[in-house]
Length: 171
Image 1 (cartoon, one colour):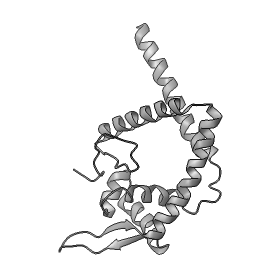
Image 2 (spheres, helix red, strand yellow):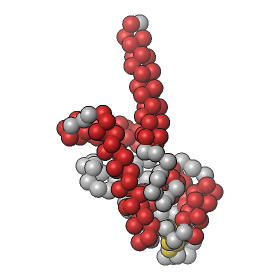
Image 3 (cartoon, one colour):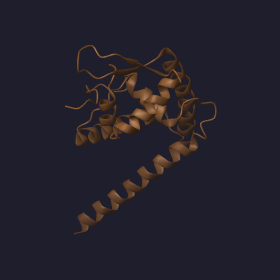
Image 4 (cartoon, one colour):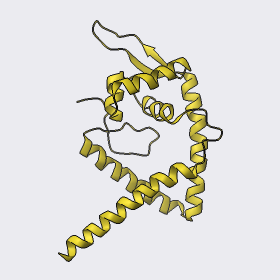
């Protein structure tokens, strides 16, 4: 019974720390000063930059969201010139979406601001490059576990992951 209580204590502490990480990470980066993308555009562009163009249905599956929500978000991005719609190759095929050069440019600019904020967090924690790499490795492993559990792999760019992953499209 002691082991179960110790496991419950550990899981409770981990759940609390993950909740705090989520809250601190978003709050510590400030009110997105200097960033031009809203959160949904940032996340959608991050996914679209890593692979083939995706349909609304594939994006909805990837983000576990309603197609109507993704449609509204992608529609706003279309109007802003951040993504472009590709016509279907064959009859009955769905339209796909990919980032435009403007979308990728604005994503890169916002990402630079976000990375600077992340660097401040690492500095405030007093972590060395080695400690930061350890944390990154654990985060990748943890996220892979979540993806495996959900049956949704997240495509990654930038060489932070050595394991192959899918594109998040329905199987």
